[in-house]
Length: 396
Ligand SMILES: Cc1ncc(COP(=O)(O)O)c(C=O)c1O
Figure 1 (cartoon, rainbow, N blue to C red):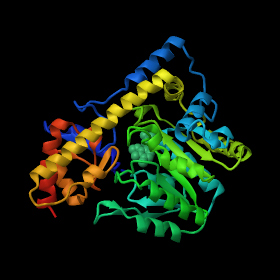
Figure 2: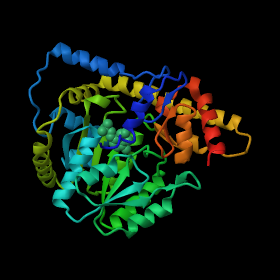
Figure 3: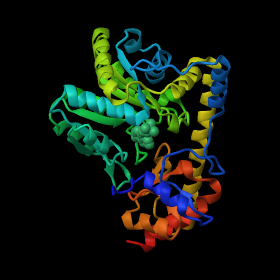
Figure 4: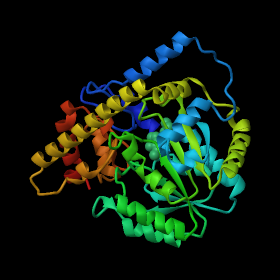
């Protein structure tokens, strides 16, 4: 028997629990205030349009839907960006964020053999799996400082500096998972400086564009900063969270190159790698994205809906902070909950404390102390605060 998956296994245990206050804060999936899954209205509109047009279900080319590849690169980098205008981006549709990361990992394994990938510590639970699966060596750079529940900026810079020249540096474009802690714009500049100095290759994972701040452009600013420097880099994108297309498996891998000729070659190699893995990608999610991003009216609808989703998460974040501060008389500073960005909060709870959250309070979460605020309702903020305070002070 293989062990259960540390994140998806949490949802299985949650389903089996019958307690009325149970909360699933394990998986990073958006829920409404009633804690129900949410299909965006703009997605339903796009699907209606698709149905009316009576589109067929023929195979896509290996690289995916052309209209999707165009809009996804533009959404990431900005349509007017030099790298787009000069056709320097190789974009291939992927099987959501995970599949896009996996395809890039295959590219690294095939053409950069001996190079390693630097991964933040901690990171999203599947990153190490993906590189292990592709037989790409990796090591970690410091990212999280438990003393401040903030970024270990100096540790991060010195580890990136110490890595062998020409390493890949995996960076979370925004809303770092699991910590919810992002570098400031000035810190991003220094990160780009050291990466350039060492001839490293940045490799962005952008799974939350628009979901962190509520603005698609703001959340892409880290990636665009690297483009403005004329660097070559990779970006994996996902539409699971920002369009709620979790099960459609829609995303892309973009490789920003120094010339359009190189971009063409890179794209041909990505296609060569994709063909034996899955032949060609699924069409439904690609059409939804192409319709939403490519149609000004639907695009505006999407932005409004995304602001609502990001806003709901921000409001439960605030309410959780208020409840923690009101209930805890010890003077402990809980403001890190407010400073963190995106879906998650990294509570600083250890293994045993996280287990107490589940066993005593029916709050399902990952053992690293991460909670998904997208699975919290304002009605349950006080209950969650009680659970956190009990676990923090009564379990060591
Ligand atoms: C940082 C990060 N990268 C990638 C993904 C991939 O998700 P998906 O494969 O559903 O697009 C996630 C999902 O939680 C994530 O948090």
